[in-house]
Image 1 (cartoon, one colour):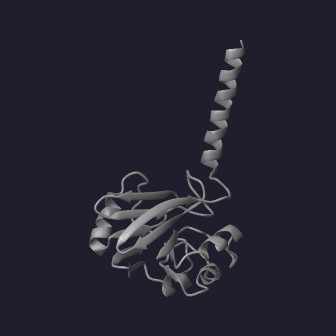
Image 2 (tube, one colour):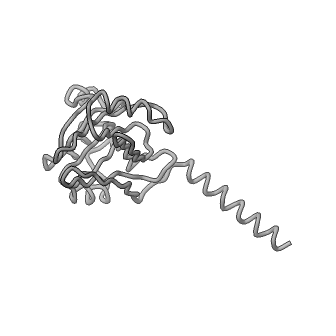
Image 3 (cartoon, one colour):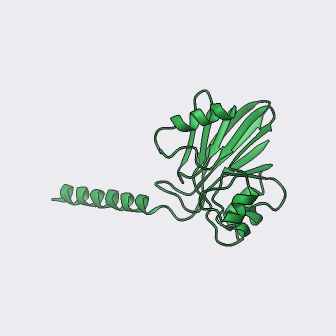
Length: 186
């Protein structure tokens, strides 16, 4: 079974970017960890009946009434939990680990950080990042393949806008390289 996990799409319309739409069509289950932003965006992802989703902090009130805050489901014997905000740290996943134990799941998928992560200890913690509004990362989603109770996950980097921090960091790196080249010439 192939799953695609995403979150924090923050789409104002019902139009999913073409690259993301094509990718979604390849998977058996689409898991969205919140922050669609609008009902139109949610409905666009929900065509085909393979969406599992929770609401996020940026979702409109109608979505918060329609979707749960937490969701649990099972795929081939693997228990999967979802929530939008599992914790606020981008480096310490302790809160998410405790939440996974509380929910009694093997995998916890969460959003809100806009930065991809796959961490495996006694549970698998997954933040797919954001395919449209990344922070300190490139646009991304996470692919999960579950076969006979075994889970393999990988971060997929997408084309699109990179966050301004990375652009700035890359420009500093390029500037330093140019300065180093000029020093070698002298």
